[in-house]
Amino acid sequence: MNLHSVPLKIENVADYSIGNLRALLNEIAARLERLAEDGIASSIDLKSLPFAPGEYEQLRFLLGTGEVSARIEAIGPSAVVETRYAGVWWVTHYNVEDDIIADSIDITTLPEILKSQPADIRDGLALLHVQLNDEVQP
Amino acid sequence: MNEHDTLGERLRRQGVSRRAFLKFCAAMASLMALPPGAAAAIAETLVRTRRPSVIWLSFQECTGCTESLTRSHSPSLENMIFDMISLDYHHTLQAASGFGAEKSREDAMKDNYGKYLLLVDGSIPLGEGGAYSTIAGRSNLDLLQEVAKGAAAIVAVGTCASFGGIPEAKPNPTGAVPVSHIVKDKPIINISGCPPIPVVITGVLAHYLTFGELPARDHLGRPKAFYGETIHDRCYRRPFYEQGKFAKTFDDEGARNGWCLFELGCKGPTTHNACATVKWNGGVSFPIESGHGCIGCSEPHFWDAGSFYAPLSTPSAKVSTLAAGAAAAGAAAAVGLSALDRANRHRAQDAHEKMTSKDL
Image 1 (tube, helix red, strand yellow):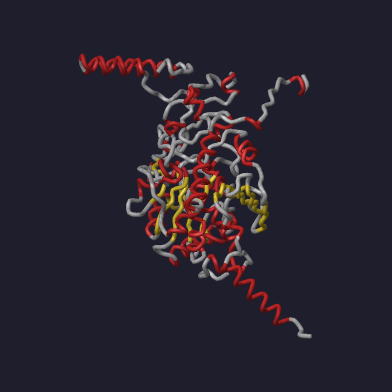
Image 2: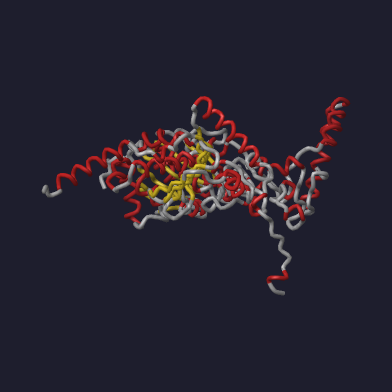
């Protein structure tokens, strides 16, 4: 008996969902409405939600990729992608071993993680001053 | 490293940016089951935090709980040990042994009296004066009582430390009891599970660091953030349960289609834990996703709660209807009916017959 004779049934995960996704998409829509009307940003933690095998991939497919895609390198990579629905961002943080440590849908105009942080700005300014002082003046 | 540095100071010296720290806090918020928006607030608190001394005592256990923690991906154990806590005593992980090891525990207790965190895995045997399990010639009971005195709080890691676990299973030859049976005057949190989910352990520690107290607990002393709902509540197969689609055997069409495992003995409906969402092995899957029902390992006396493969006993409509009618006629008749129902169930269990909802 060889491997090809094993009767395997390959399922197409791209269109597979047992109903968990519809609930999630409705929640995203409700939050996006809040952002559009009242400017209230919010976030959905994907790690706390149940997904059947294939549904996570299906969610990626449904939300798609929009105009902005950013990569952050800070103790492991982070992917910040605006989906095809403006204001709906998919933010995934990985550790240095490439395991996902946080995964969320952010409904906002700009995810906080993309902004320069005040503490880092002060450190950068100090570093720049040191460099200017060290430079040999012409 | 200066022991009195705050976490923020240490990280800054290691060249970790605030953005990187914010990312770490986003992971922490997810860990603690807090809203993702809490990351900024956690960052503000944690940068000012000094790392607490932690003493870990292992009693009557299998080391599965430590194995679980060492597989914690987020944050990694290295992060936990070197950045967030000062793990001053742990049999399995520390390099020191013998008198040196015991001295490090005594030093940590003296230097941090009233402030250190005590983690315990394993149950405590009381039989034969505690002779069933000893460390450095002292019984587990003696050691626990001494170390608990100076602890700010106690974390019981695993079902053995939380509820007695497998050592306490019938006939409990060693007289095993949980931590809460011995210590009555300290805040105790139970992180049950056999083993517990690694990120739940780190999540509770992160909560203690961030807020300076143990998280809210349920009636069994477990953190509500992780044990507030049942496996069934958050199971991705729940829609099949609602539709009445059940696997009847482990290799039938229903099993292949990933239908609900209730009739194959899944204890998800009565088991409180976060396996269905946090999952295992760095978020890869959990038992139900691999086709096996939940065995209920985070609940008290799970080992003595009948077969893992017998469906949960639920009264059928037929019996309750009859019983209600009988109750009107006389309470004695109702008792008789439910006893008959129980007898049928026990007979089937004894004969190892697969029970279905019809049998119930």
